[in-house]
Image (cartoon, rainbow, N blue to C red; front, side, top):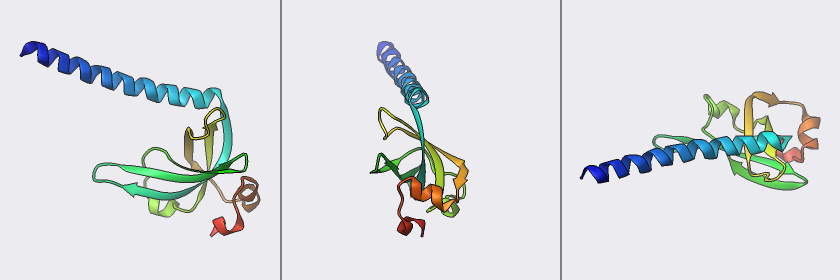
Length: 120
């Protein structure tokens, strides 16, 4: 019984370590291959114990819809607004969004690939 308990603890420990390593590698890839664009915060999916943020953005005239991290505080006020986003040039699906940097300049938003209909 004690062997099973130790094995169980080892598996949990390795699982937690792998999550930290995966998160570090994700952020490291973005930092090493960083590109910047503008994204639109489009949706906050709420589950019983967590939330998930969804964004729309363009890279090389290709549209992406992706999720990243938990929803920010007061997310209802931030939906349909534009923010600075960093992504990996190797994999544009790997993103980091900075909710402290809201973009209100219409010209910058349009130059990032959005259309005037996206501004509403």
